[in-house]
Image (cartoon, protein in one colour):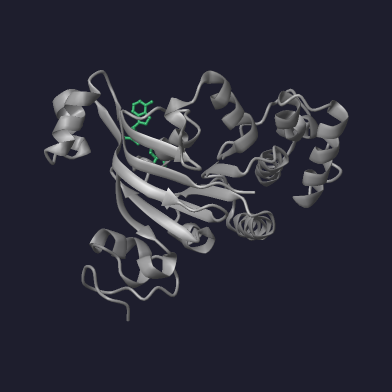
Length: 282
Ligand SMILES: Nc1ncnc2c1ncn2[C@@H]1O[C@H](COP(=O)(O)OP(=O)(O)OP(=O)(O)O)[C@@H](O)[C@H]1O
């Protein structure tokens, strides 16, 4: 169970006159010029990429580079100013309200940095929530939730409230909730960024194991290049709303397209960083 995702020439401008901004961008303006000229913020510009089914796809970039904007297009929390977003070859922009609801309930779940848990519900209820919303009985939903809580090491915390848990435990609840929803796509927006390094390492390992076992399509946002290289079977690097480079980590490491990418990959331990732009491997 998994799903393929494709973005075709996706642009997103936050502002009143996206067409003017897009015209300026097409003429070569960058997001700073567009902001100065039009007052609009460029979230993404002309991003095309293909996310294969059944793997972890890491999207990295500095703060404001457009990572969250990109993933929020996949479940249409954001609609593009231009371009197409396809899930398994179908353009989600053409979906009816009912199909969109179905997409969000049955096909795509999200894990956020700040957990997004329901504070007045227990851990078990939080994890069972997605299944309950889909109409599953309480008994079945909670049985499934219990199983996922055990998988992420939280057995015994079913009746706790999120506020009583540490950050790492809350993030595990978020992960269990997404997995319990049994969607084939997981969108993860900086899920481990707030955690200390050891916990983060631990959760990264767990995510790799779970992905290998379950074969989900995971889109994982991070500003941490080491995390991107550890988790991603493919990685994409965004800068100022543009896609700078995309590919398998080894290929990106071996041949960064420019100095900006080279500086990024130099931070990955063991990286063999070419000194000049676009150098061949070795
Ligand atoms: N609702 C919004 N209204 C106006 N501008 C926005 C909005 N959301 C995002 N932006 C702008 O779009 C650009 C990309 O933002 P986005 O949040 O996608 O980046 P990001 O890489 O996820 O950053 P971060 O790591 O800080 O979350 C930024 O310049 C941001 O200010």
